[in-house]
Image (cartoon, helix red, strand yellow):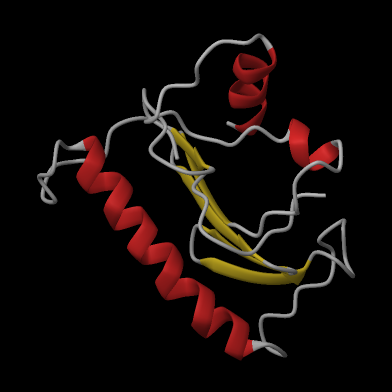
Length: 144
């Protein structure tokens, strides 16, 4: 989402107000401060569903019935699952992920929370992804 928004801005066009993502070029060029955001995403392929949230150094992944917690600053490759050592992180991030997913589903169903979710994937960096997706910004994954 950020790349699309950044390319539109770099081309000199006006980025629509309801468009997801932010222009990251001022941050990368040192003209603007880092932005902290919480990022969310999900994907449903076949009978496999995966959802995730990144908040600061922490990432929670729900892959089917399995939950994983990673410190992505210390473990970039996400090889050291800390779910049992950091239940506090899982207990903080899991409700945030559930609320986001409810919002995305409600938006996709036109405000009808009982309707089936549309689309196969999601990634939000600021607002709803049109055409079936979700990465949403809020506050804690630094862009640098």
